[in-house]
Length: 320
Image (cartoon, rainbow, N blue to C red; front, top):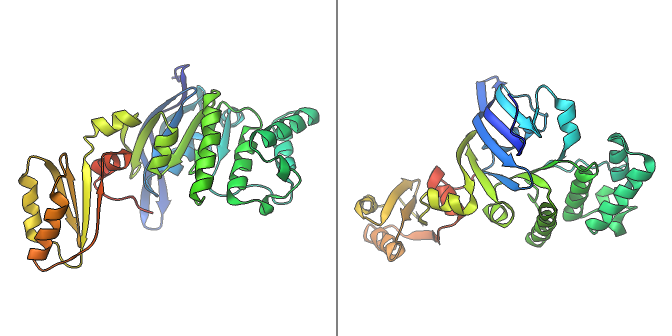
């Protein structure tokens, strides 16, 4: 079985189970994905959902327990060396060589992939200029800011002109301004035809960068579609969340009978109401609590978005 020529990445019923002293731990449970060449595709989900394990299998770092995975038409388990030649990978952690300058990190990567010295040096200078790092050319990675180090890691992943660029939580730990600046870099890459597969638990990041997304939780794909399609097909509602300073009143459960309310969740002093028409509901939740002698310590109302689509699918907040 081979992957269709138009697919940059394709998985079929992909599983990964880790063994531990407490028993088997399933990290991926039947992942089915297809990423078209030239698109930016996002794997969304909370921490621990299985996103990094999935990317690890696609980049040959993790051996699947069962199922199939293809990158650029190549089976990742049968052709790991050739797959590595076709991809670039940027992990969550800084893996730059601190004993080398920024330029040398790129030059040596080029030589590793078979470039001549002249070609590797030319490519290194080209990428440093492209990513606005020329003034850091002779500096060591430990002298770089978090955003600069991340840009240099992306440069290094691009040295050999990979067909697919994998980014695992590319902006985790970066300040908002740096994050937005990095988004611009990634948009430019994608506009030039670079296939990108990224993991993130930042929904605004997925909306800013991705054409299509897959929501993953507990190692399973809950939904896969365009960003707008996911919002619509999941029936994403406005989510009203209220936290009380005591046990939520029983009267709240009566809201489930309303036509505009699709779901009510009550747990540990917190109530979530999913509604097509939220008008007046937040005030009513406050009133119901006051009547029962419990006050509100926190309240929010999220309009339909990729985030509310995720909450509608999973029924809970992100796990940081």
